[in-house]
Amino acid sequence: MNDGRGAPRDAAPSVGVVIPTRGNRPEQLRAAVLAALGQRYPGRILVVVVADGVAPETVAEQVSDGLAPVPATGGRQDVRVLPNRLSPGLPGARNTGIAACNTDLVAFCDDDDLWLPGKLAAQTRVLDGGTEFASCGIEVEHGAHRVPRLAGTDTVTVAHLVRSRMVMVHSSTFLFRRGALWVDESAPRGQNEDWDLALRAARRRPIANVDQPLVRVRWGASHYVTCWADRIAGLEWMLARHPELSTDPRGAARVYGQLAFHHAALGHRRESARWAARALTARLGEPRAPIALAVAAGLVSASRVLTLLHDRGHGI
Image 1: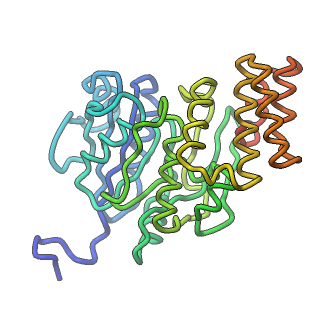
Image 2: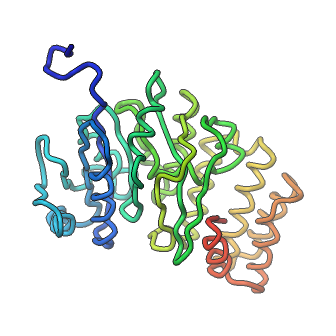
């Protein structure tokens, strides 16, 4: 049977994969595109690479090196390269990509991450039955280290995302029904737009999670890793948008501890101490508070702390 347009009703849903890029990681970008196109998946896969702050022709050349020719626009081809037509930065680039997809589903992948075999097939299976949004486990790569990070659950709720950032619910794992959600472009410098999106998705309906490491997330090369002031602005934005982050003691302590650490990294000792005190008031055992105080006192550098954590597949 078909739907009147020649497509079988039980055909696998088409998927648009949005990959924003600044054009500064051509080898990793090509690997991300190849991994998406190489998924063993019976449905149509369209990769939309969004050039943010760089000429799309430059990005098209980067992508096409080693691939079939990549046109800058158009039709039913496997890959399109487009300029960011909305607000500069990651949220605008992602929304540009969503708008360009004429597919049933939309997925995200960062240009330095890699989908592993079986990712798309496993997630589309859990979207059957009306679920809108899916995630999966990740494998964190930092230098020579690779560490799996799993959620320990097949359903992610608002409570999960408030109590913990759930790093494995990563933007490069996102798969959702087109038209259900858009990225909030008011996120300062694109910080925490993915966490905000996941929270909004979970409010609509719990997130279906495939608890296997099906995306390799490469830490260390991101433009955002040590943008301390941007990270502070992003956390303050989240606290303002999602008041429930301040009501769960463990979740609140985690955010306050992160703020303490970021201020310490900037040399803001008084602000760091203030946020560390708030973190310990919310939860006495919050580990980020003493770490932040050690950084503020000059006993250890923020970069050293991040290296040690990233080697173990964790962030601050």
